[in-house]
Image (cartoon, rainbow, N blue to C red; front, side, top):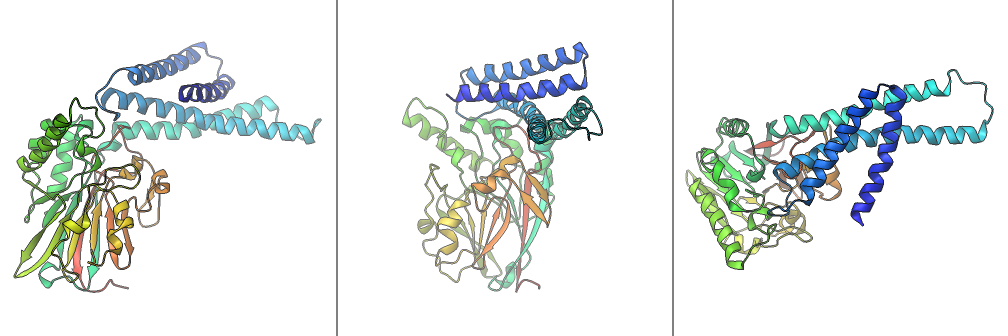
Length: 407
């Protein structure tokens, strides 16, 4: 049924796209190239989609096939919206003014002008998606935040936390670009680096080629990490339960080999000059059908309300579900998971939008409720669609300051 809907939809937008092209040019070679490109992109997508693969996550050739199809369909969809809208306008105009003599230019001229306009507008999403696949996925940005807390211990005034999330190493294909991102992270000279889950897409072996590189991440108080929903191996069919367990054990060992301290529903104290803050890490807990291994009560066992706490939780939905309301007062939560959908529009300090906001209340950046904060990192890597458009890969740097927020 899904394939039938897809075919009908594709044919509908193809008709309008071809009409727009035919209105602009009669050059047979342009038309031939147009159909050859369409056939190649669609054929490659069908071939990759129907081919047997390991795991249910779009990666590698399948991801690129999806990306090229997406760019082509967005181009045709924008053409269709404009040309179909013009058809509706003509029909309504004809119903009220069957014999109009007030037109300033002929219908064919208007049709050609609109076709040219539609082509120009449709080229914008096409170029954006192709840019996102070629450059945007590695367009690393450092986003700096300063958060104020009245009860922050004096010794941690000015403490800098750097956060990355959602590495998804199984998607990587450019060592030079990844090294640039890691070097950029180290250049921040943070007191601590935290990673908030999804090291891989399907299985632990994906991280092996990148293990040495990510092991170069350094910070004065160390690198701490947690698990994300993809790290448990749930998106692959395993031969036995033991094989799946071994995969998770291998992934945990990978954290250790890189020098990362993996927190599994537990906490550690960071001390300075006799004062301390608690770093708490929960396993993945996600709303809906996502893995629910996170146990905030277990992770915070022994902590008091007065302890200053930074919590790592992969999925921000856990913050809405439990963390922000917990009596132990978790001052700052660091999450990821959403990727900002790798697609959206952001004008720093003024506007941000992505379709993912209709699924997650907290999806990118800093949010505050009840005097408690959450930062949702947009992700270091990418998944399924091998690119980013408007929502760039992120390194968050959060400075903790003692006192009240300036007016």
